Structure formats: structure tokens, C-alpha cells
Image (tube, rainbow, N blue to C red; front, top):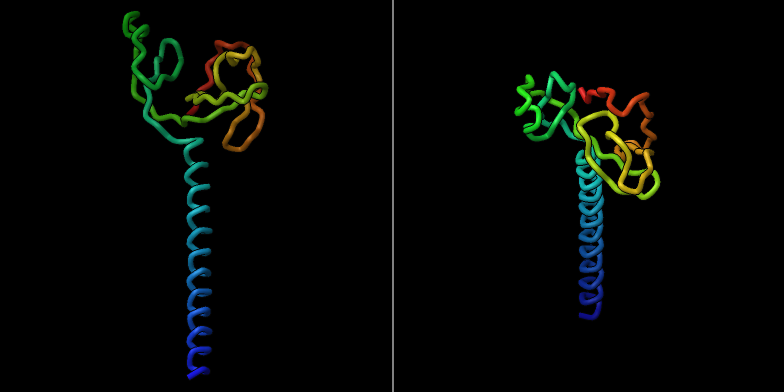
Length: 131
């Protein structure tokens, strides 16, 4: 009977090890899925409004353009996440680079999707489509 108990304990330990191995695989798979979802959230294709007269993209219908009787049409654009190179504040933009400077005064935006610097443009009112 003593050997039967020892074998039973050994079998139980092996089952527990297999269970922990399976759990570790599931945790690894879940972590990879979370990383992919987080990366996908940094850049996504969305429907937006495009003012043809202002040559700008908007997430909601621009009331100022409607009041001025501008031509507005629906479009698709990539909504990207940017971080300020100085303070780290994150914002989303439909354009390839956010317009203007951060609230801290720095105009050094970094694309959070690939963590690269975003090149500046000659004038802040230059149209930079996200399409």
C-alpha cells in the first residue's frame, strides 16, 4: 500500500505539471493577443468627414464648415495615435501629423504605432491627408 500511495502522489504531481504547462501556454497566447490588440488600437481605419474647401479631415461633422456652406463628403482615413516628444501626452489625429504644438508648447510628435519621429511640414495649415 505504501508504494501505491507514492505512485499516486507522483501521478498527481505529473498531472499538476501538465496543467501548469497548459496554463502557461494559454497565458502566453493571451499576452500576445493583448499586445496585438493594443497595437491595433494605435492605428485604425475610420469613417470621417472631409471638407473639400478647407482640405481637412474631421471625426465629427464640422459645424463651422456647414455654416460657411462648404462642400463636405464622407471619407475613410487612418486614425493614428501620437505622443508628445517632450511631455509624453497622447492624442489621436486623422492626419499624418497632428496640427500645431502640444499643450506644453513642444511641436515634436512621435508616432506611437512605430515609435518614430514625425517629420514637420513647412506651414502648420498645409493639408496632410491621412489617406
